[in-house]
Image (cartoon, rainbow, N blue to C red; front, side):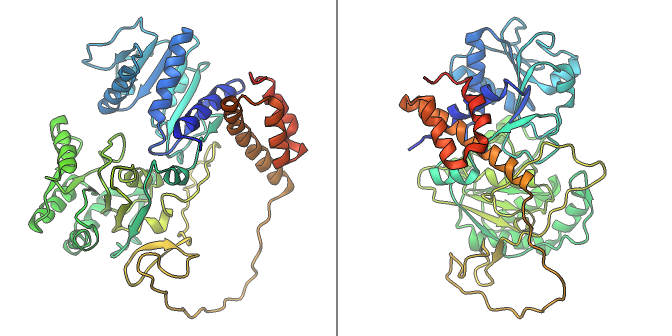
Length: 462
């Protein structure tokens, strides 16, 4: 069985191969797949080869986490961040805070050929692309659903559901007992208007539903609750405490000590629910969390997936993650393990991305669990949904078929991805190029072989 490290090595091999033709790549790698680990391996290779590597990170906490990871592998580096004593311009490996780079107008190694690694690259890094126009760039993200047009291509080692099937992540168990009506909310900058959301969710009845749903369905699990604002988060914390549930609030102004206390409290059981405003959606790992409460609606699929991701990491005796979606976000974005696609094309100006209601899921009217529509009975309580009367509407149903060009391009891309996986297997088992070639041809036919033969030229297989 192929291990997670095998997939990581395969991804790194794919990155090096694709860098031959593309300067800017996205590493699309989900929660728990080891993006920071792979970045460390690449930095280590750069150090061995004498190539500078600039690792650009957002936020003090993420800078600290990455530095600790490099130290774990004894990778000599410097940290370019305000008030940090380790800064040493002569080091080949530089971990840089994007805010420090901008405020000081200081971009290490921008005048030479180097590797630039961009953490959380779904956020804008336009200034980095301007400062490092000819350098090799690698963006890291588990949610590449924003404007990714600065990048030429992407590498995706494996799907999120594959990590679940490997045991790296746990299954989700989503409940939507009380869904907030968002029909009156406006969308600004890719999400619901924040002040409107806050006014809506601070309604006493809605807050009460959040607390009640945790009591009824949360199984007293360690939970992270995502609120709409600081006041909303504090309101939820107070209501949890009134209900006899130990709770704490954190926001962007909370000290490192407060955040540490929140994490340790979840781990030792002294705190049941940590209420926060977005700060725990990225770069914060507490695998013991097995319940995620979405107490605010979101139009952002990035925020939605990252928030749920805080509860999906595996942990001893953790069998699944309960998601209490009090805002019906799952009906906008689908389940976290749903297969998704990305685009590297520039979005049309002024055109807002549309999310149609997700018809791949349904709610059980008896236990409120969300499950795949194709299943006849609820997998949690066994109930059969009642048959609904269907009204016929006159119209023409048109079956969508791929054009020949679309089909050819899809097969070529699938064949290349399959090729990179076979290369790793061949290295592991000392198999020749001919074996890789025959496997690809057997699965995808001779039409893709000119591309595969071109790739094999650069392979070091015998």
